[in-house]
Amino acid sequence: MCGIVGYLGERDAYPILIKGLQRLEYRGYDSAGVALLDHSTLHLYKKKGKVSDLEAEAAGKNQSGHLGIGHTRWATHGPPNDNNSHPHVSNNGKIALIHNGIIENYSSLKEALISRGFVFHSDTDTEVLVNLIEDVMNSEDLDLENAVRVALNQVIGAYAICVFSLENDRTIVTAKMGSPLVIGIGNDEFFVASDATPFLEYTKKAVYLEDGEMATINLDHGLRVRSIKDNRTIDPYVQQLQMDLASIEKGGYEHFMLKEIYEQPKAIYDTFRGRLLPDQNMIKMGGLFEYKEKFLNANRIIIVGCGTSWHAGLVGEYLFEDLARIPVEVEYASEFRYRNPVITDQDVVIAISQSGETADTLAAIKLAKEHGATIFGICNVVGSSIARETHAGAYTHAGPEIGVASTKAFTAQVTVLSLLAIEIAKMKGTLSETRYHELLEELNGIPKKMEAMLQSDSKVREISERFKDATNCLYLGRGYNFPVALEGALKLKEISYIHAEGYPAAEMKHGPIALIDENMPVFVIAPRNGQYDKIVSNIQEVKARNGKIVAIVSEGDTEIAKMSDFTLEIPDSSEAFSPLLTTVPLQLLSYHIAVMRGCNVDQPRNLAKSVTVE
Ligand code: G6P
Image 1 (spheres, protein in one colour):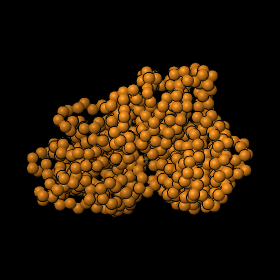
Image 2 (cartoon, protein in one colour):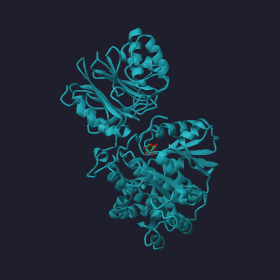
Image 3 (cartoon, rainbow, N blue to C red):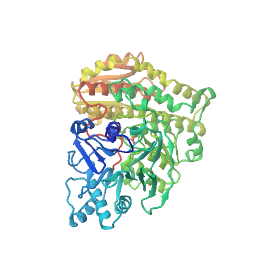
Image 4 (cartoon, protein in one colour):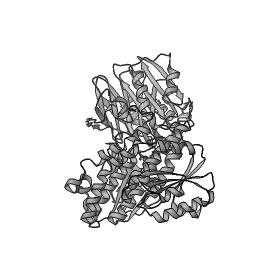
């Protein structure tokens, strides 16, 4: 988490940094700050709160400088306040640094620095690092580049850093270990950022640093990449970015989340485009075919992920077991990695991550890899750490997801899982030719069905109005739609701060039923092709206790409609694809409730989109 941005060139750095920080705010928004180098004078502005608070702080003050660094923070060490905001400056006032990550041994380093006379003004690990660099620079008489390298060799932890010295306004030094960092290369100008969005309008040429690499950017000598460990020179791979500016703007929608909900038909279509070929009665997936034997001979599939990606993994479990008859375990990456799990070279691990940077998921992959498992990644961000760490994979092509609460990434992940499960089932012979073809046709039709559903959300608004003041909500689903219940509840609590729980509908009677009274809204996902009769009984149980029922039902359902306070209809589909449809009204419901409650839907409190800390 935390977003970092840097600029070095002919232009004024300040507006570039501010716009860049706004684009990176999804990574954290506890505080923001910039450091500008105006010849040898430092202008430092930092403020608790959003980038807009920083702009207010810097308004009317000196914003000159062609070199600058900026930071938007998701607090780890120390509360969000002005002091803990980045950039941090070393004791002699000559080095400024921004950091995304966690320095795990900061406390012992800090003690050593204090004993050498250093004074600290914040609770952060970052202030330790900048002073360590100063200490190395002075005691070993090194230039900034070499001092950074020597200092980083004493550091344990994760970082993406960007640092400059007041004595050199033509150089920025950056380094990466565990947190993402990309360098944009323009004509006589350079950009540094946590992702490429801050510099898309200036250049499409980018170098993604690998873990353990540092780069010195100098206006006279250009870019020099080296290994932090042994100072070896590394040839940077310059890639041409495909992303365009329009994809990271709101495009007329009030919020990114709403835009992304509405983009889902396209996201799903883009995800299966070129892969799902019903006319030729085939699915084409390079990553799968390359590792086909591994999948076919797998003892089991282990799916790892966090948050919404973990929910997509749960849908995957139903798909793989139901269609391909392969046993599946779905694991929270954070639990998996620390549990001493049993992993063998007969296992296939599918890692799901929108950002491709989630620290726990990345660590889970590394662990499984060490034990010989085959790792298949499902990521949205091209070139992300997880995508690079896996043996094979399939990108979701959902486009940049900016809203912190994940929407289109989820349905795109489920789409990839559907393609995989269907194709593996065909290869294993667990699916008849006819059923295979039906599934291809049906998946192909999902974007159209979704589009139709999105035409009118007035009913969702009406329901949102009715329940916007609820304090608790229950979400129930069975089978394929149990994960949707979890995802629906997560969406609501994330952005509206209403406590919500997702449950398998049949489990309700083992606990949550005690909570049901006339004030408890219960959202039941009950499409016709699920375990319909069973869920009807569960609805009756809620009704008997006066709970308020909102049911997501198949078009034309009258039976559940009679028992419910409200219904929302979805087009008919196989149970296997119903999560792609039932998720949508629940996303919209959370969105409208959050807006009605005056919440910041795109940047909910305390959350961040890319969780690069454990
Ligand atoms: C954060 C985000 C969630 C996301 C989760 C996993 O908590 O707020 O929306 O589902 O991280 O992120 P990933 O990028 O690995 O899918």
